[in-house]
Length: 367
Image (cartoon, rainbow, N blue to C red):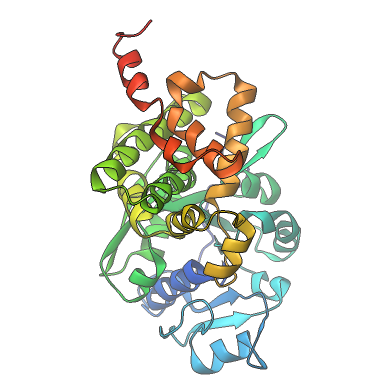
């Protein structure tokens, strides 16, 4: 994994924080950060800037609504944001002089945003990614933290976990995992941790980040199972097998996946939450129960302008695994079945095909 190309020193004095993104999770992150920025003992400026892609809501600009009513009425309706969270529609203005960058946007937008951010951020800035996805190029899998790190030449941590945004915004207790170098991870722990939001830090950012991306693929399988009306035993098996295949992907491309990371919030906890309450599960269930509907149609119908990450990751991951020459039947039968149901027209009932044989093969019972 590529390390920071920047200085390891954190800028002195109070740090300006900019949240890049204002969807459901972005607005919730801004709430957490805004509450902590009001604490004078912490090293952050009181004002927290949130970059908002401008939209009209009943004839009014979304930024105007946020800044006057302190509520993101489209993506986090019914939750009041701290008054020190200020919505800004211009990205350059939002990032001007920023010391701390918090990325919470769909990863497809990064190529257009990063040059503007680089031209306006503080030279000593550092960042954290809350984006649950991965990218791919001709050489294979690319971590989004590395995309940000390469373009901005700064240190980038990641935050992943069992984080259904609406529940955290209501201040139901939850937790998350920050992966990154100790110096920066501790700053982010101070930035995010609240009495209702526990944050742990680990020094294995690639495993944390990949857990956050790959669990969305497993959640598609959980949704297919729900669409078929299968029970909790089946879903538990999908979750366990899915976690095992997630581990194998991480080991295949990075050679390391510490067990304690899999057992932290970014691993098992996030996987369970996503397979029961996430939008990838919800849309996959709808996909099974409404034959003929495309993923684009389902997104528009159910997600209020948000995007699915699981389908994008599933499709690209399949291409990379094929290029790597893996044994799908032996190592990734669940991921194979999920892909074929989602994109090849396979019946949803094929979700569990080959999983029994895979178990026997691993025990040496099948040649």
